[in-house]
Amino acid sequence: MKVEDLEVYNKLFHLALEVHQLTMTFPNFELYELGSQLRRSSNSAPANLSECFGNKHTNIYLEGISRSQGEIRETIHHLKIANAKRYLSNEKLNIIVSQL
Image 1: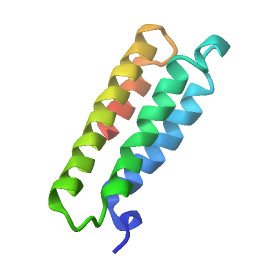
Image 2: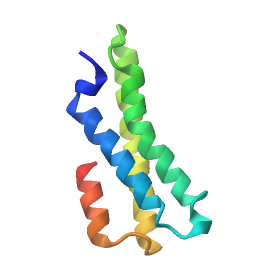
Image 3: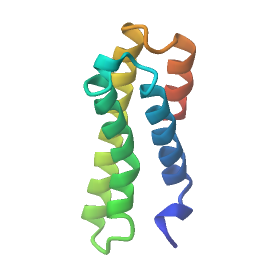
């Protein structure tokens, strides 16, 4: 079994791509501020799963899952900030957060 076989990995992978596309619509001055933070945190969630997947040490595997969950919470925070700044509609925010 590969990490790509995990449904959670695939969902997070595709959401990272969706968030990336979304950040490209932010104002130019936010591309390297909030946009960059969103791209990094959303990409880190599946990356952490990938890094720890299949590790023979259960504690390392669980740590990777925990880090991934932390990145998801960080991504949600950044999305809420983007929504408050009106870069993201309430509807789009709710859709992405429900998928996360």
